[in-house]
Image (cartoon, rainbow, N blue to C red; front, side):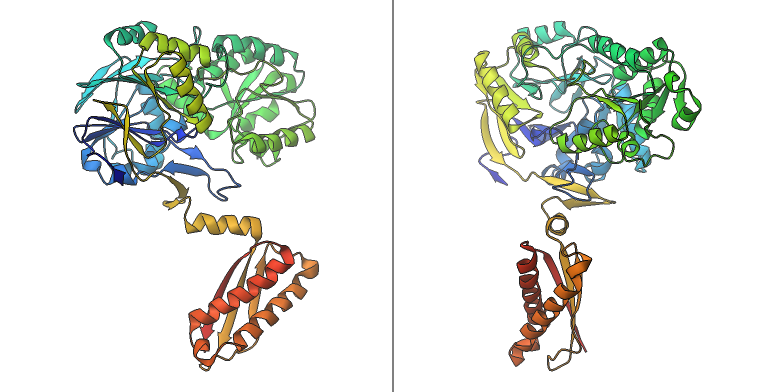
Length: 555
């Protein structure tokens, strides 16, 4: 760690995820050599960058080494990018978790699947509650977002108050839950806000993000025109959207069918905590085939093109219960999250090829964002009037634009943090006072592996360049026993594979035979000589840099 001051020098802010990226949120606050985590989320992998990996979590090495100073994890809401890493990483932190009832219910399902239900101390905090953790006095402030019970956190300390917004927007008719507690935000501003740590997702979008109540009108129009079956895919955790879709299914005399495990998990958590109690009967996917086409509405997971999501499996004609047929209408009631454009384009095209009419937010008013546009951000700054603006939850361009907006709104100080940077907020802040290890771990079965480590690098090399395995047997004098054995993967098709393999065998044999007697007795030298010779031939053939592994058996 490079650091100019001690860890306990003032009120410190340290993002280990979510700054310079959308997703994988993890922010730490430090005071008196004690630390508080706000949110612990995941991001989903990109097959082109991390092939074979589904889930990525933040590198928590720095705070894990200081877990005796960790007071707890406070969760702002139940989206995967804010709580999805808790069950993967808790054994490394072993601290209490604080969450409101719906968020705690969503977390409980994950902990149960991970075998942690009886280990993790989860404290259920009522909405609007105020509690203390060490030097931090934390108050929950209700806001609006695309999930029940989102909260901003007013974190009061002896050196100033931080308002950590979490994900939010301003929605006068959110369908589910409370509206934003504007009066609390204004009073907080009157009392004085040291720093506003704020959502940056939509800072590049002008105006207002729109209301959940308004999107029902657009969905009503599209569903009302559909003649055949209607499929709607949205984020499984969007309980307000589920309510809207259930109401529209009832209005248009259609049975609501849920397709996807995560939707059923959300339904269970919502009903357990008092939501979705009036949406009526919900049918399982196996029942959909018995219903007339114009009497069914299927609500599906997979709105971001996830291969294992219900919509992805349906589009690939790989779902055991549901298939697309000509005349179906498929509505994507969701935003295209940056990074998912390619997978969604493939999904849309697959659905169209099967005869479906595909409707996205670009074609009709079927979605509103859960994040604040510029006018909403301006309102937040007008209420809270912070001394310091700290943009988070955004790619670098979002953070830079957000900091510029804050300066335009006369905020005295604004900076755009990067994961791993320690910033002192008070006293005498803001100032970057150090940097610590930050990065990404991939979930690989029960293991955590570095995204920039050898495993992922090799897998990516195989994906783009192909690979080969060369096996040699040599005697004690270093002479070859028979021809080297060569297995090629993803380099040449069958028509030329045998000829190319013979070229590799010849090149490896000649290179090994030319080794000096002393070198031929060194297995590592023989293996490296064979590797270089094989790679040279394969590179000349393909123009790529294939991954070549060699093994030497000395007989």
